[in-house]
Amino acid sequence: MRVGVLALQGDFREHADLLTGMGAEPVLVRHADALRGIDALVIPGGESTTIGKLAERFELLEPLREVVRLGTPTLGTCAGLIFLATATTGPSQIHLGLLDVVVERNAFGTQVDSFEADLDVSGLADPVHAVFIRAPVVAKVGAEVEVLAAVGEDPVMVRQGNIVATSFHPELTGETRIHELILRGEG
Amino acid sequence: MDTGTDRVKRGLAEMLKGGVIMDVVDADQARIAEEAGAVAVMALERVPADIRADGGVARMSDPGMIERIQAAVTIPVMAKARIGHFVEAQVLQSLGVDYIDESEVLTPADEEHHIDKWAFTAPFVCGARNLGEALRRIGEGAAMIRTKGEAGTGYVVEAVRHFRTINGQMQKLTTMKHEELMSTARDLGAPFDLVQEVAETGKLPVVNFAAGGIATPADAALMMQLGVDGVFVGSGIFKSGDPAVRAKAIVEATTYYEDSSIIAKVSRDLGEPMVGIGVRDLDEGDRLAGRGW
Image (cartoon, rainbow over all chains, first blue to last red; front, side, top):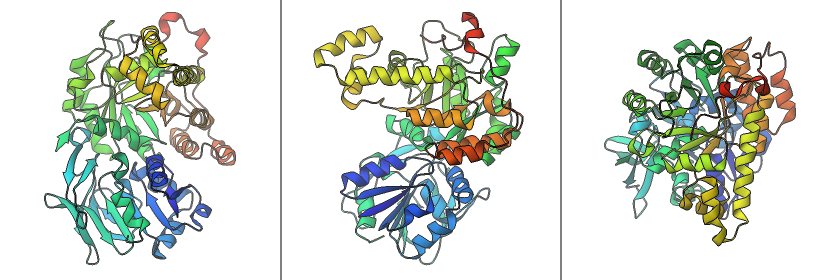
């Protein structure tokens, strides 16, 4: 199974290594032609403003939108969630606009407020040990969006059709159950 | 909920990988850096080239200036504390700075000891010229390493030397028998457990960026091809003729570091680079990389 991993910036190698360990074949995506023939797509953690600007300058926005709209199972983590969303509550930035949520960036504070915690995820028997780094939360959820996990009242994992997105980083803890969702095509 | 764990501290550095961290001295420069695609900004009072030119004692930045930069951008804001100056570091942490750089670019406050970085919730990045230095800093709690290079020169040779040294020493460790590791740890002046870990994995347990002398898109791509995780650019941007254009070009060359046609394209018509200083032209006392113990 070929999984495109957007490799403009961020922890794309951690995603690729995790996917390799799960028996999938990661493909690093820096150009649109690398999207051809992929069965799933991952948008990694990183700086969402940087990833958005590079995707725009190197003409990846439309090709990415096309792939996701065709129904390709897609996972976005942290910056990936922000990039997939329609907007943020803060200054405007570049989004794919495919996931009908408004995201609040750095919702828990600065890096000194970053944390790890066990998190109950709907559909998973055991909690996920989740790492939140300058993490966003979902501030507004569209009608088609299902909330899969929350910290307090704030959604931190959502699903809409073929898209799953998290505020936390399964790729940093060796957690495979989130990636399994898209490998099984349940994204 | 656990804050300030190793995973959380090292994790932010993981998110910065493949990116460019830019030195800025005010909010306007920070906005230019963010607009160019920087993954973070490093707030400091003067860029290294000016610290060199002005002389005197270089200290932590004015907290007011740091707060103005924090208000101006959404990307992480880093700031520098003097080597061993744990109170400057406490102040930076209380300001909510995202990463503290215990930096040889500022004038050291302690000529024997570095800051006990385990005592902080904020993560630290530290410079290193060789593996022993890198592992001592990690042993003190650094969550990210950068080459020292020679800051404020616009000359990449020292960054290359430091990265190759660290890498060469790591490779050598992976070929050693277990009984050789203790005497090697002694010779490196590095904690034994970290030496053992590097011998097993062949890499540092934290992210390693290049810093000190990167001035062009090709410099950034050179360091990326050598195998660093990302780059810091200090004086190279805001001491050049057209900072906004150069900053953007360095960001693009860092992502597409393996694609020479893109590097050629983004390197076109960038205007004047910063005027470089040959490292051999510097007196020993003017070299910043020797600071740190």
